[in-house]
Image 1 (spheres, one colour):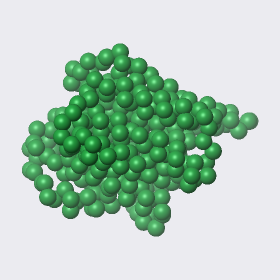
Image 2: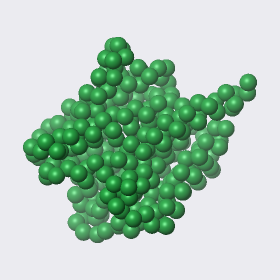
Image 3: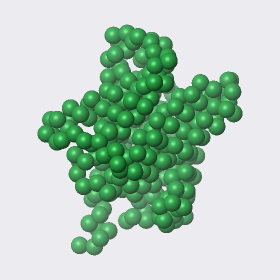
Length: 295
């Protein structure tokens, strides 16, 4: 059997898992809208990380797999550090710029991923990869175009969000490399469990300055936030990253923007504009473009 034919089912499974992860990531903003207390962004972030860690821990125990944290793995260290930096920069930047600006600028991560792959990972970058990255970033811009707004200190906030995109690129590359070197679901779950625990512990002192007591309703939605768009979404994306290229895995994260506005339309009554629909098509097309070279 030719190599490309043997790899094709695995890549197709990876695409399916990646889009499922993107769908769950797309529920994040919808769930957050239902939180009624004035919870700080970092408090929500830390809470969802610990809930996600607990969910992954329960899965590992059900599977009767030993729980371990590979703290000596450099990909793991980079993933934890970049997660912490990303959460801090994204949430602080969101206080100084619009949500649409933040979403677009954080999704510059694929551009930084291309740079990392070319300069540091000794990975050939084809023209189709560059084209796919441009299409994805432009697609993200179109999906949130109508929500652009001023106010605050947009330049400072936008710079922080670009930093969030850069740190997220580090997370995507390090995680993808680790997953492509992994050999089992148990190994991937342990890797993810360690990231959630370590990142949550490191972020806890920063979140402690703005702690608020959540209501009983908020606790329910915080649990949903920790399980669906955090534990399950990241797990599915990790399984996808083990099967597809780093850039394909990266652009599938950008596809979460598509499901964000679809879920907003379904659950919050938001309108889907033709421009947003065009942006969604461009993002999905970009994902499939990156698979052409692999096929």
